Image 1 (cartoon, one colour):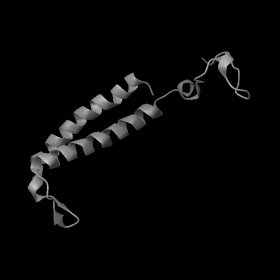
Image 2 (image 1 turned 90 degrees about the horizontal axis):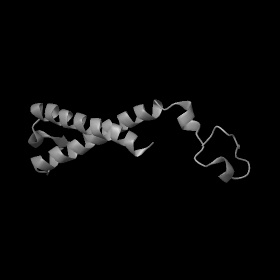
Image 3 (image 1 turned 180 degrees about the vertical axis):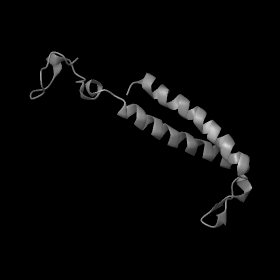
Length: 97
């Protein structure tokens, strides 16, 4: 995918991660969180930061999958090499850039 398409994925995911952060931590106190039965030994700011990046990563994965599945068959099957620069055995179709 091109860099513009990556921004189509990253920017909305960033906004959704911020929204999730606000919604989750409006109801959850970072000091009350436990990991495998033990309290987290992190400051509240560290918990907020780690959760924000986790939310951002998960929403980027979901948005990236959506962007990948929305690609047309032409985009998926497009040859990256010009017709005269393809190796032997590669189709020399004129419609492929």
